[in-house]
Length: 279
Image 1 (cartoon, helix red, strand yellow):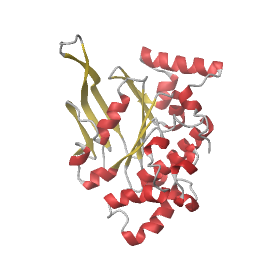
Image 2 (cartoon, rainbow, N blue to C red):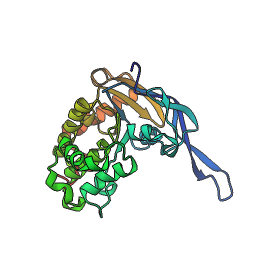
Image 3 (cartoon, one colour):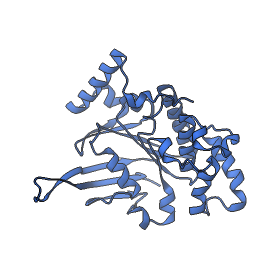
Image 4 (cartoon, rainbow, N blue to C red):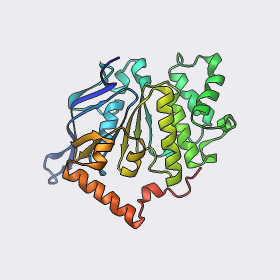
């Protein structure tokens, strides 16, 4: 197929805000305001910005969890509506890797049960008789030993839990992964391992990736292109090389400057310290 895998045009999302007074009308918070984005085949687009910039809202729209007031989202030319209105093929095609594997995995289920749950919803992907082999394969794909299949998330390290989250997404053979701060809850050394895993999986599974993050150090390791959001609007989009060497927008320059200052002082955000999450 020619053209982008994912295409977003004129995306606008508003949420009700606080009341101006006890009896007054609610204000409106414009979370996303006229965003246009494309992601090509086997490409990683990093969507970056501070907390509240709207980047996670864009991700939730792509997943069909938030309904935009305006704009279109298409996957390989087909419209992506709310998740419950999508045909099974499109439900499988776009999968999510969440920020915190500790809260996104059911603590009462084993690793095997977590991954097999996806096949219960979409049995055509892995018929009943093939699931043992399919489970072993998807665990191997994310670098986990098959012996971990009978463990529960509490018996795994933070890095192993995130590998299970990625395996759950891969189980449905998606073409597009949406990763929302997928390494920010992990220790820095484990972050690099998970990022390398995503790069390898992209190559072996022909994946496109929408990678949501606030951490520009992470962007350097994984992104082909970078789009920068501020207060709901897209302020700059460029190749990763161009953005890091010659940022055009003052806000992007500020973000890079702040990141360089943190590197210079050796400071790291609490989100990326992730105590106790090492593999």
